[in-house]
Length: 328
Image (cartoon, rainbow, N blue to C red; front, side):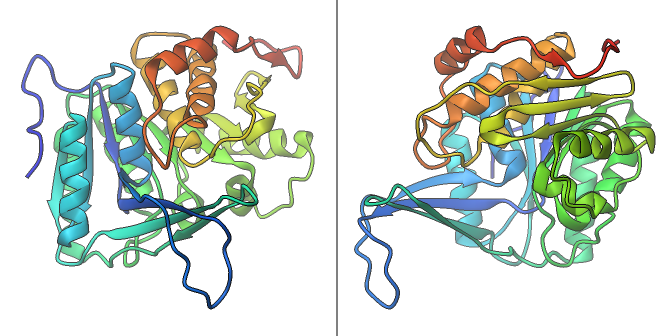
């Protein structure tokens, strides 16, 4: 089941890998209270998980993309059906267990958001191998692979390092956005690593309370050969960019309210689209910040609107140098 992968000469430039996809369910209630029956409002269903979210935004921005992910059970069927309706090409690996759900509740009275994320199905060794084989096939003619999201139960922490090894062998640039063990076990082969401060803190094992400490941690990953570029997302505070030659700070676009769900995935998607167009890194990151801001305007985890991304991109300022070295 799925949209067939594109034949030559239209094979996707961008392939995304989502090892732990989800059916994202979003609803609202007036007030969240314990032990009470909470009468929810209209429910929204979206295909989710890091790489799937990235693929959806890439598609909206006109990029050539194919999503690779395992799927099983009724929730897996619905994820694939929703992706098909959105016109996003994909390759799925059938699994015995059911794809997980993620549940988000918006509280009307306070504006607070409550997010419940399930661990996901346990993948067998054969299912994990199937994901790797499909990725290898899809990536053979791609320019970029985006591996995004958590690793499900049963998957070894070094799985993304094996993905990096495949990308290095194929000459494909890998963009990685993950956390926990999936990040801690990566030592080489990543072109761009995107991490939040929390994820960077977990990886380095230090508090990283100041910007200088955050830059130092990002540069440590570059100097150790883990990634050529490290982008630290700071939410409403913008982003930090570290390369071998430079440190730069990007300002955020001021937004009034909105949900940040999926903003990081939108950022990664737009950066990858920019790079696939041959844009410089700075310009691509600015597009990523614009897409993250546009994501704040969408319900649930719906993909952002391309017109909003274009509008915010025009407002996104050039980065400021944190030192006197230029980015080469």
